[in-house]
Length: 531
Image (cartoon, rainbow, N blue to C red; front, side):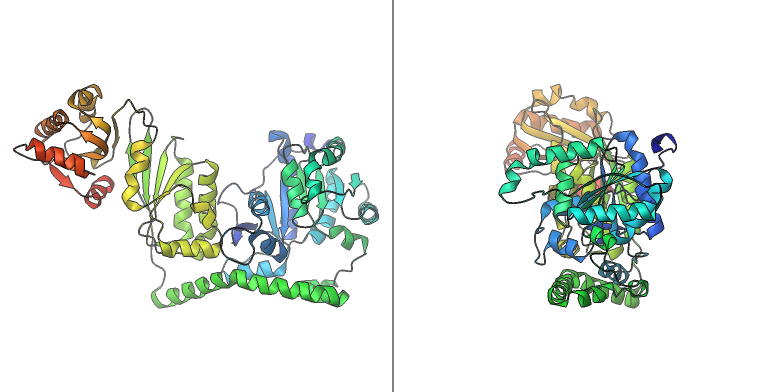
């Protein structure tokens, strides 16, 4: 039976493609808020997405080891950037360890439950037997993987096992030099097997790296990193009784099974987790204290749209002093709903001093959207207090790219898609027409540039701001042309901005009887963003 003929793909709201899904962001890694039943539903839905785009999808089951391996304990960059990217890009991420659930509760965004690989695989096997989906067991010791397959089939009559493979795979060292040749047969066997779900039991980070480097070649709808789950199923490693699992003390039971090896591992893991989350806990305590003393500060983002010629458009989004998750989610939705796909968004954080912890996932999504090119945006004025918060959240790396200071607001506007042979670029807002002049400017160039046509766009209640910060030389003939514009529009409505020393001297040399008004960057910004 081909299950794709029997069911229409519904799509999984848990896939990491927006802020609409319910997630807790654990130090820059989104964790989906699921219980076991919902997790099984989401995995099956991901399977049925495959015929639409033929994209292999990945499910991560994250515990403390994953966080430590990906992020490290010290600040700065990621300890394992590739692993961090896999976890951030996974289509579904479950909380395998109770410390992740506890962290979500401390941060005020509690997850419903643990969803461990050891529990997910048997639940999926039961569902797969009913749906006619085929499982492939990959990794672990061969006798253990084979034993796990036999048990799953015995417990779930009708379950199809597409294959069992326990090869040696290399993700580091000398063996990495030949990984394409070594893995080619494995990939071909998996693809020919007709498997719907690939269970990868190589342990972290090996299983994530193996999937990531072969993600474009795999023809299995869903792969799941399940660590040592085969050993639990096969019985070679005992699981705690159900009542211990329900009290979230399974880690203590496991230590009693192998105390010499495991107590040190768990102790180190908890210490490292404590060092990782300490900055977040400080932020959480501060947030609770501020909320008790002053309550929640209302916050909203204000928008200013800039429209220009040849489909050029931009929008400045001025973000508030205290930024909440709901405010940022609305901004993201509005950005994604923008009908002109080439719109440049100028995200102005100059006034923002604090982000609520509830905004962490929305900030993560914003950074991912910009980094991936799904939206075109520039960050303006990210101050030191905000950067400290982003560092504590371990997502500051997403905001190190397209960033300018507040005085440089004009750079992305004036230079975006600018051709050297066109000396001007302009944008219209509700309050002003802003004209940027570039390079060496003379009167003839201004006439050929179509400046007079541009000025016809100035409404009676608008100012005309001529920005000269990108002009290298303004010849005297150009100075005369600009003064004539003042006579046409009215000298009180034509103002000059961004005037550098060389340009200012040319106005002094010209010594016109009625000089045009000069404004500073703050005044220009007020004109450009006036409601």
